[in-house]
Length: 276
Length: 269
Ligand code: HEM
Ligand code: SF4
Ligand code: FES
Image (tube, rainbow over the protein chains, first blue to last red):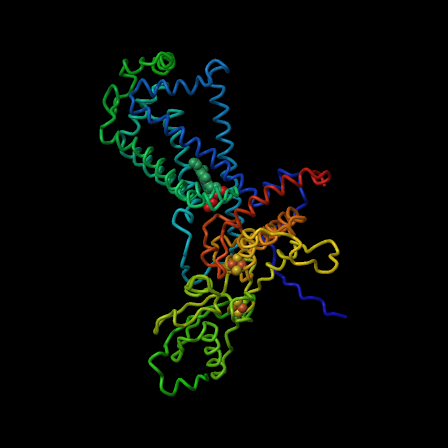
């Protein structure tokens, strides 16, 4: 009788599981998770660009950007009640963020398990670059920044916040050097994340064709550069006093500045409410 | 080429090198680096011949020789493989360790040699690692499930040249494991995707394309990490397999998932 084949005792890094319905099975697999991650990343990229384009209205003056803020709430005209579509978009983006982070965390855990003991002598990386090796750190910085940014300008935790007056809220905030540097650093981290991410997503989605392969790298670098240059220009130009608040000095609470509080009709009521 | 030659005239061409080698007595033993000086290494030697020379020296000294895997010594079997100065298969691109020549190093070089590392590549001894997790992936790809009869005429199935070429590029994979060793995530995507592509691209491979893809990816994921597209595998691969195949695998996996869903009975098994 033939001798039994000697089976290796290499242990699996994950438990065998019962087969699940299709979408669960798909998201359970690492390849599926990366696909979801790439799609959610793409959604977030769409958000980042539209957000940047909207913010460029800052340079057209206070009226323009405040009206833009209003227009976001009014989307899509009178087809839906006010802010309904905005909330749909917000929830969609929140969900995209949530799955993106969930996939990032679980895949990172898998990868730690797959390389439980690391090399004992220095590695010499040939292809992996700084951006690709710091994805999880740049991602965490972006997450922390996002929370800070929402608190700062959407929920209005700062002392000068006035609902509806996006222009002055932004300028007052960015006049503080510490806050300006937070914006600069976070956007550099986002740029780094996108330098790799906006290329990586093509691979994860299986979008690979010799005709476009060179373009994919250029796209990622160009996209990251656009986001960084655009977003960093705001704190920079405010710090350089190219963009100034329309009223008041840097540290004057808005409540003392009545003209500022009444510029936008929609903002009026809230402003009255906030600062009686 | 006995070590005794070193006592005779050493030609200018011969090199003096220092190697730092990972020594580990067994799978669960504690390992450590150990330094060895070699003063008569011919630049014409392959890296493995240099290790042979080291082992002869160790034998003469009554020490345990360094265990390392090798077989064909011509870059086709995939047995050899080790980290040389922090790179799988060493500094020369597109070559396996056995094809790396000592002339690629300068005399006086200090070379660090470590086994491939990944959780699913446990160390057998010294530089020899157990890569049988690769065999599990291959097995899960299945073979043909139908009796084939006699070999059909080679030209019976027309295959466009482009397809044959790309499939051949993928089929070059020798299963050495350098891609896993190189990957910071310990992922085996390059190996698995190469194995998948060389069948999935061919007309003969279509019948079981989708099952094969799901099964091999699933087995891969039970042993290895997840790709983050560093591209380190492609750079380390002695056969210069392209990460384009990884994208193909990703695409095929998604398609396969969608196709399986349409098969009644697979939705709620
Ligand atoms: C909450 C913060 C975030 C974390 C923790 C995070 C984390 C990660 C990680 C770990 C990866 C995988 C790394 C890799 O593929 O090498 C990744 C990929 C990616 N991220 Fe993020 N990220 C975050 C936010 C963002 C944002 C705001 C965007 C878009 C503007 C974004 C876009 C992308 C893209 C496009 C990819 C590539 C997806 C792929 O290759 O499958 N991420 N992210
Ligand atoms: S893909 Fe390249 S590095 Fe990976 S096992 Fe095959 S030949 Fe070795
Ligand atoms: S010994 Fe066969 S590939 Fe190196």
